[in-house]
Amino acid sequence: MRVTERSGARFGVTVESFDPRTASADEFEALKKLVYTEKIVVLRGQRLSSPEFIDLGRRLGRIDVYYEPMYHHPEYPEIFVSSNVSSGDQRVGVPQTGKFWHADYQFMAEPFGLTLIYPQVLPKKNRGTYFIDMGRVYEQLPDELKAAVASTRTMHSPRRYFKIRPSDVYRPIKDLLEEIEQKTPAVAHPTVFRHPVTGERVLYLSEAFAYEIHDADGTVRTDDLLDRLLEFSGQLDATFTSEYIHLQTYEPDDLLIWDNRSLVHRALHTATPEPAVSHRVTVHDAHPFYEDAS
Image (cartoon, rainbow, N blue to C red; front, side, top):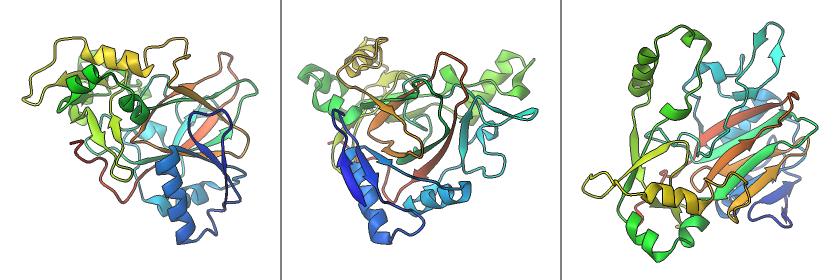
């Protein structure tokens, strides 16, 4: 396994000569350590079948199958498919996923620690993923904002960005909203938590899913604290020039693994309708998702 720091990147490393089909347990432990410390690991030169991609996920932890079936690979439900390509008369996966700042499963009671993305079809023009390191954001928060978020909890829900399913056509919007609230009720997570592996404090909120901050006694904050935190982190920057935003692009046969605790991300899709397909596997590792930030 050969590790190279990415020149000019805010975080992340590139790994070559790693074959998940033959890697030892020690090599997998070293890989996970890299993900936790470097936030993004780009595995170069990967030519894996779908079952081999799933096996890679299983070597890292327990795979979480996405709760909405329309995202599933038709043969392997462990794989989440983002695709604008049809297979015959049937669409496989969902197009234009992730066009908003979020952390995966942030709206669930038990988010997962690791996200794996394996692009299958890359468009000729630019496509990639924007990332923000929310550990670094918290570290650089002004003391006033650090004091304001101490001991608070943030409420998260997918209601704003829920994608309409084919079965939802002609359904009353009231019924759909009731289903969303029943299937994925709003959850509270600490606004700041301690990473269970690195000990780093992480500001845990996103433009897509966070909608309310509560004080320690459960009182809803009615000030502009959430907007100020999103603004500071760069998530409200429509120009994507914030010092905290990192654009990760892809080369053929790249496979990305990132720390879903520390990073929020947002997909960069092409403006023109070029074919694009990515597969995703998400993994609960051997650690609790977060620890108390005190």
